Image (cartoon, rainbow, N blue to C red):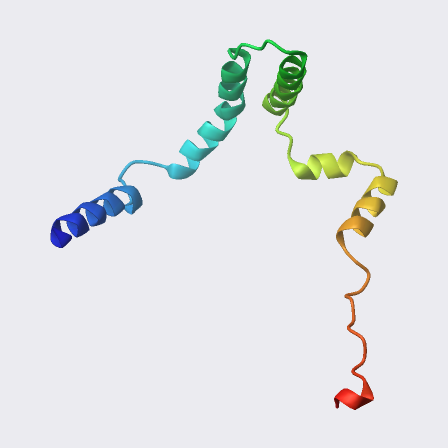
Length: 110
């Protein structure tokens, strides 16, 4: 039984990991990433909503997904379009000025 399970999992791993001739995984991944927002919008808009929270949440999510679908939404363009005051606030929030230093050891603990 051990050999049968081992053969099964080794075959499954080979089928997943082995390079397949004639396929370009990079192009396939780009195609999927470009069509993902449209698929998410279609799936999200088909869900029924009965409450105000559901309707507003769905509207907000659809707005974000549609803006991602229209614009590539890359981070460098967002950061480049921000004003310098916002960037300095972001930098101050992300990078601390110095690391915390533990207190000195007491003389009696030496």
